[in-house]
Picture 1 (cartoon, rainbow, N blue to C red):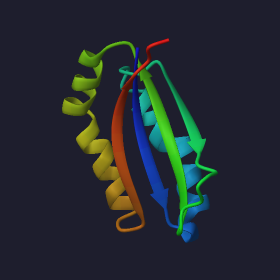
Picture 2: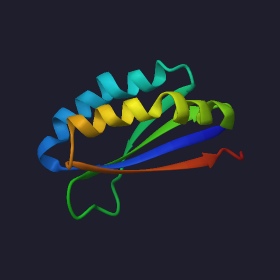
Picture 3: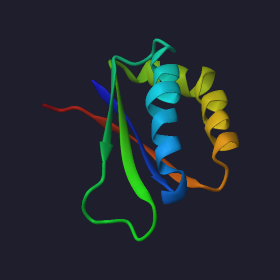
Length: 101
């Protein structure tokens, strides 16, 4: 099993709108690709970011092949949609983790 982790720091002044959009639009669109089993949205509590609010969204997959397909066929358009909607108001980085236990 694999976790595709997206860590996002979002500006405080757009937080509420962004949070609702992620929960009701973006994450469901990512899951609708059929590549992922599940998604969890976690809020960073400590350490407190100097600015904004930070979340980790963890998408679970059963293979690296599905992640590769997601990155190739779906991620560019979904990431662009987010970037266009909230340009300059968030920072994101992605990591891939293997579930070992």
